[in-house]
Length: 204
Picture 1 (cartoon, rainbow, N blue to C red):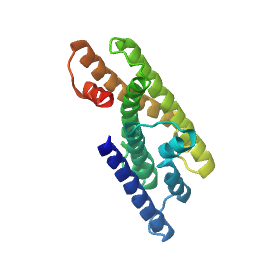
Picture 2: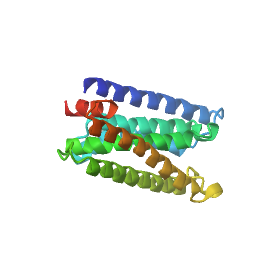
Picture 3: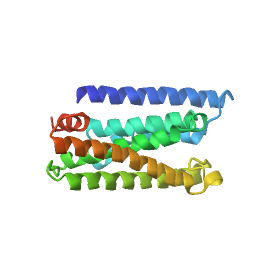
Picture 4: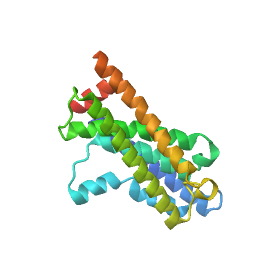
C-alpha cells in the first residue's frame, strides 16, 4: 500500500507540473488549450482526497490509482495536450482502457464490501459489465456537461452527433469483455494469472 501511495503522489505531482506548463504556454500564446479545462484538472486530480475528507469515506490507494491513471490519460494527455486530435485512435484507446480499469474497480468493490464469492462467476461477470456500462454512461454525461459549460466539443457532437458517444461506450464494453474473459478463464481452469493475482493483492 505504501508503494501505491507513492505512485499516486507521483502521478498527481506529474499531472500538476505538466498542466501548469501548458497553462503557461497557452497564456504566452505558444500553445492553445482550454484554460478552464486546465484549471478544473487541479480540482479533479484531488477528487478522491476531497471525497475522503468531506464524506469520511475510505478510498483505498488502488482505487485512487485507477482514477488517477484515467484522468491523466483522458483529461491531461487527451484534452489539455490534444492527444485526441493528434492521434486518431487515442480516444478509442482511452475508452477501451477505461473498460479494463472499471472492470477491475468493480471486482475490487466486491472485495472491499465483502461481497465477493469466487464461486459466483456469472454474477461477478454481470456485475463487472453493469458497473462498466454505468461509469461509461456517467462519463458521457460528464463530457456533455463539460462541453456545454466550457464551450468544448469532447464528444464531437458538432461533427458526429451521437456516433462518438456510442463508439466510446462500445470501446469501454470491449475492454470490460477482455477482463471478463480473462477472469472466466482463470476461474474455470483454477489458474492464477493477471486477474487472480490482482485480487490476491487486494485481499492482502
